[in-house]
Each structure stands twice: as structure tokens, then as C-alpha cells.
Image (tube, rainbow, N blue to C red):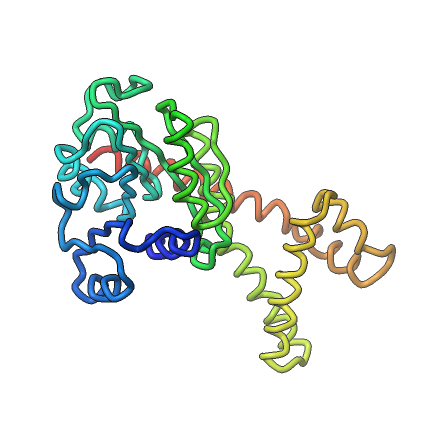
Length: 272
């Protein structure tokens, strides 16, 4: 995800020399250096000093250790942007050593914390990110954060951190749901006698076209579905089968299960 964001920023005109990267893996560090990025083997003052936005792109289980090391190296005015799933800002603030963590401005340090939930289509600049901060951002700070995340695709600001669990369930995990549906549609084509590659192409292009149509149309997905469903036709027969098997409700139930797991992760990781 971090590589996708850096690549997106470069495509937007940001020089690789303007981006500092902390990468402990030797092979990854050499690869990034060959692309012109300024890369450090460990996080230290030289890596952090003067940065407007510090992006924490580590595994959730590593966040506590990274944040505890980082806290003393931060300075007033910097923005800390976390893209780690399940990590709540109140816990991140605690690990960073911030006092008065519920103060809206972190007035003791001048730091601003932002939580982001991107998704994997960010790898091709087609992602969607939910953003939340319990600190008020100035116009300049918001512009910085949005510039970083727009490198991965579209974005929306979320009204409360509790809603980030829903964002995780709908868009964070959402690509897997669509891959699952494409996989099933491809298998149906194969079982109906189509060659595997033909079935895959039909499924992929249909998914892409339907998504583009829904994205560009002013009509709701429900209306678009109704328009392609002729009475007593093939599409109606397929949809009636899905309704009889409660497919829509199963999808809703699955997304709710993902949201519940997101809340559980926040509780588990926050105990550290």
C-alpha cells in the first residue's frame, strides 16, 4: 500500500527526492533507492525531521512498537497518518506518548493524528479511502492529507471513528467480495461449457463495465438493475434464484461480520 501511495504521488508530479522512506528490508530498500526515493534503514530524527506528513504504513501488530519509538522524534505541526487496520486514534496517541489525548488539538504537542482506511485497488490508483481525525485540521493540513491519499484514488471523510468499522467492512474488505463474485461467475461459465479463458474474460469485462456504468450513471444501482431485467426473461430468472437463496441478505450479513471483526481488532490491539 505504501508503494502504491508513493507511486501515485510521483505520477502527480512529486519528486521521489521529496519522499523519505523507512524500510528495514534490504531488498526493498535497494529497490526503492533505485527508483530515486530517499530511503532509511531505520526511523530516526534525520528520517522524520521536517516532514509535513508521517505515514505509518505498518502491520497493525507492529504499530505499538513503531509508535513508541516515533513519539519522541515528532515535532509541532506534523501530521501522523495511520493506514493500519483496526488501530484507533486514542491508542495511537497513547503509544506516541501524547498527553490529554482527547483534546481536539493535541495542544500539548501541536500534532494532528489522522486514520485512513484505503483498499487494494489503490495499487492501480483506483482505490477509495475513508479518512477520520478527532483533531481539527487547518485548510493546509487537510490539503496535505488529501494529496497523499488521492495518490491512491478517491476519498471520503468519515464523521466518527466508530464508522471506520463500517468503512472497513464495505470498502476495505469490499474488493474481496467482488473478486469472489467474479470467481463464481467465471466458474458458472466454465460449467456451462465455455473455455476457461473465455469465461474469465466475460466475467471480468462484465464486472468492469457494470461498475463503470454504475459509477457514471445518475441512476441508482437498483434502477440500473431494473432496467436490464425484462419480465420473464433470463436476467429475471437469475435474480429470482438469488432472491430465493437470500443472496442479498447473505452479503449484508457478511459485511456486518467484517465490521464486527474490525471492532474486535480495535479492542484486541488497543489492549497493548
